[in-house]
Amino acid sequence: MVKKSNDWWYYSLFKKDSPPPSGSVAFEVFTKGISYHGEESSQQIWKSDWFEVKDEEPDSRFYEYYLFVPSFNYMISVIWEK
Image 1 (tube, helix red, strand yellow):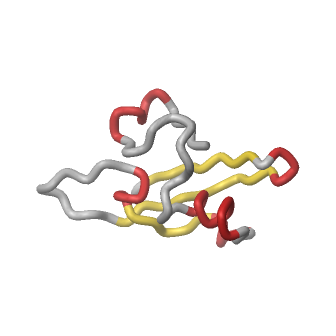
Image 2: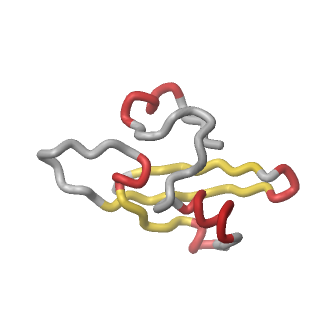
């Protein structure tokens, strides 16, 4: 389930309580069991994986860092642009 900060609600493509988007690190962790450690915890993704991209703007590289708690099957993703 995806739950977003109220500050970013407008920009996101995904609805509350929906599964994570297929291009995201969250998707890899929950559906493929992939896990990254240390410096690998921060992965490159595309803006369009999580956010709306307007017609006049190119898709750009974003980054997703995650904290996963397997015992609760809970994850927090932090997404940013450099």
